[in-house]
Length: 229
Ligand code: ADP
Ligand code: 5GP
Image (cartoon, rainbow, N blue to C red):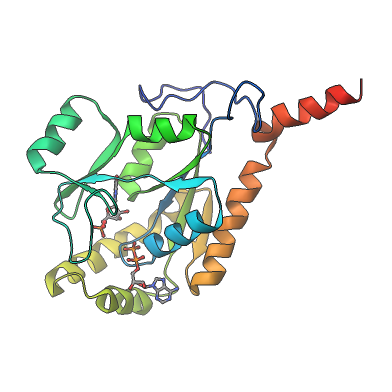
């Protein structure tokens, strides 16, 4: 886990110390989580369940130059933009991080993430390993979780079962997955997505533990301590 004190992205800059949850001066700044996994491992499925079951936790909505898949909705699954618009946003420094994944551009808009954190929501960035590295390089305080499929065969089965990608795209995703799985060592936690409910429960445990950390609870604990004096 990295500290808050290093250089940070303009709009996503965090305070050097957290006020603590339940601050009397307004909502405490939320916690920033990263979930990465090879494509098809189930991170979107898990992250959506986690958000539903663990309020006030929200998923960040990324920008992408990738065309929408059947059933995907602009402004819900992603903010779908042209490559030109994405590149202009990147040039203007609007992204906390962005990366080229499978030939398409994906990015997290710093102002979006910051607004959620400032409102007291915990935020999950569902981003690839390159993006996770960039967020860490900014020195932001994050909890990074790597989700693994239980096996290569399970990943292949899930990619095919999702039936949203061409055979060529599936082969490319499997090839990238072979390299990506080794990146688990860069993360704070590893969750194997064998069973959806069990994996969501593990993710929830991580979020709840991070919420109970001293740095998150300092203000609330100090308020209680004052009652004893
Ligand atoms: P990702 O966001 O990592 O690309 P998805 O969440 O889209 O992956 O999941 C890929 C496919 O695998 C989906 O069809 C999803 O329903 C399925 N899936 C997710 N988790 C599991 C699991 N634990 N067991 C079986 N299938 C799963
Ligand atoms: P997909 O096209 O399957 O939705 O996503 C492909 C990959 O892009 C996934 O690994 C996903 O996590 C990643 N991704 C989605 N949004 C972002 C983002 O904002 N930044 C980065 N770096 N990766 C992203």
